[in-house]
Amino acid sequence: MNGGTHHAPAVSNGSMGEQLIIAAFSLMFFPLVLVVTLVIVLATFGKSFGIRDAYVALLLKVFEACRHKVQVKSGYGGLEATDDSEDEDEEINKKDEMGLEAGDTQIIEKDFELSATKGLEKPSWAPFKKEFELSDVFYFSKCGMEAIIDDNVTKRFSAEELPAWNLLTRTQKPHQFMSIRMTLFWCIGCVVRYMMLLPFRVTIAFIGIMWMMISTAFIGYLPTGSFKRTLNRWATLMSFRILVRACSGVIRFHNRENMAQSGICVANHTSPIDVIILSCDNCYAMIGQAHGGFLGTLQRSLARATAHIWFERSESKDRTLVAKRLSSHITTENNLPILIFPEGTCINNTSVMMFKKGSFEVSSIIYPVAIKYDPQFGDAFWNSSKHSWTQHLLQIMSSWALVCDVWYLPPMIRQENESAVKFANRVKSEIARQGGLVDLEWDGGLKRAAVKESMKGVPQEQYSNILKVD
Figure (tube, rainbow, N blue to C red):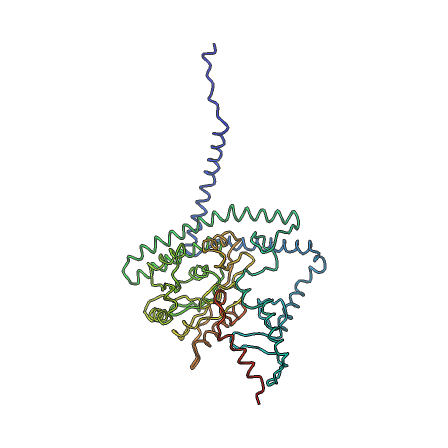
């Protein structure tokens, strides 16, 4: 009889698929939680298993293999590919002959330059005194055309061009098919960076930011004293170390014995990420313009726990007020060293531009720091005219890694009768020398502001002094 027969309920294909998805997420969830927890614990104590260093070393091998593949595909393989070191030596010698500094690139060879402070730098063969000649106008025209073709300012506000492709999607050239293997490398890189590294890094960054906001809010209620300072130091270091892990940061600190414990610390400026880089090794007070949005939230969080100097845009024009607040901070006992970026704007880490003299008028002792990023693994430069702060963060976290060197330089003391401007230039030159950057005297503010009339008048006055007057 059929009435006594029992059939098992049928399982639909849809419910089976849902169960498989749930099972897959369950299997991935616990290892992910374990890895995140391990990263947080290691960051808390500033320790590492060396996984990031091994990861960076592997990337270098991949980049080298891809560079060799591009050379061979472009017809530069074989014997020529073995002469890279000789070509590099020839390029270095050529730069020395042209008077170029390390890290500088020049499209054309110039024999007439315009300097921000020295005006017209004439060739050695030019006479000291001469009669006026109508042909003199051609020298100025030539200098102007050379500046249009290859000036020393504009190219400092765009991403640094790499000699070899680093398999990132953000390039300034259209796609060029090289080989199936190269295309496969690029596709795998996109999957690794956007599907694996980016979600993991965003999770780590979220934990670091939440910890910063919660810990500083709690510390802000404590009475001022040694316990509050100690707790703030521990919480701040922990927060920034977690944030560095969110960028797969590999940072090499040099000469820690020169680290600032008080006073004014100055550094070259590439991105607000500079603050995270330096603050995972030492605690600093910050000075800068108050921002809104996400960056402003972080500023207000930090200000709850210790003394920072955030000023409004209207106050930034009042140099006396800012200098007074800065002087009050460094003369107050037990205050943290204050971190300042005297360039006043972000530069693409190929050069150091003019330092504003304000901080060098306040203190006679300055602690310089040089920061140099490795552009092979990602572009750390923040082009604020093109990208918001959040977009910049996402670009950093979707890059391969954040690799940089930090040098703590010996404290520099203002000499007797040395002006603040000369002191600032001396510190700037030392930072550029240590970081292998180009030392420029131009103001980074030229990115947005027009050239001052006083600067235009320097070469005019200089030329008038060259002319013979009866």
